[in-house]
Length: 194
Image 1: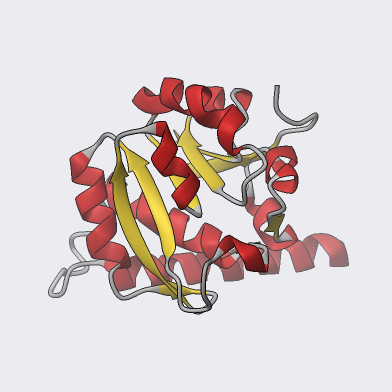
Image 2: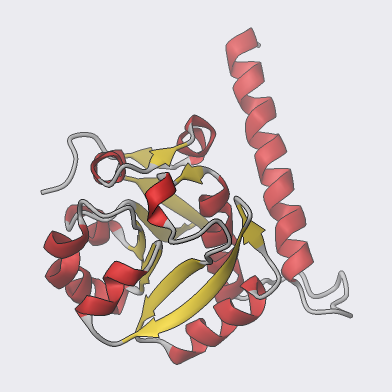
C-alpha cells in the first residue's frame, strides 16, 4: 500500500469514526444496540453539524462573537423540529445553533446556513441571485441543487447518506471549506455554478 493512499485511508476512517460517535451521541437516551437504524433526519442533522465544523465563515458573518449559527429551513416542519432538538446543545466554532423555519426569500439573508429539501430546490433557484455573494452555507438534496448553485448536496447511495460538493459557490461567498471535508465528498463538482 502506498504511503499517501494509506494516510488518506487512515484519515477517512478517523473522520467516519468521529461521525459515527457523533451520530451515537444524537441517539435518544436508552436506545439499545439492537436499534442500529438511524432516522434519515438524524443523519442529515449530523451532516449539517459536521459541515459547520469543517467550514470557516468570515468574521463579519456574525453580528457578535456569541451570535448563533442561524440554520434556515424551507418547508418541512418535521425536519425543523428534529434539527432543533438535535442541535439544541451543540456548538461549532464557539457559536450555538438556532434553527428557523423560513417562509420568504428575504429571511434567507439572516442565516449562516440554508437547507433545502429536494422538493424545495425551486425556492433555492429563486433566491440564489440574492444570496450568492453572502457568507451562507447552502446544503440541499440531489444533484439539481448543485446545478442551481448550491454548495453541498446530500443523497443516498447503497443505503448510505453521501454528499457532493460544489466549491465555486462557497469560494464566491467567502467560505473556506476544509480539504479534509472535500476528501470525504463522493464527488467534487468542477467548473462552478451556472
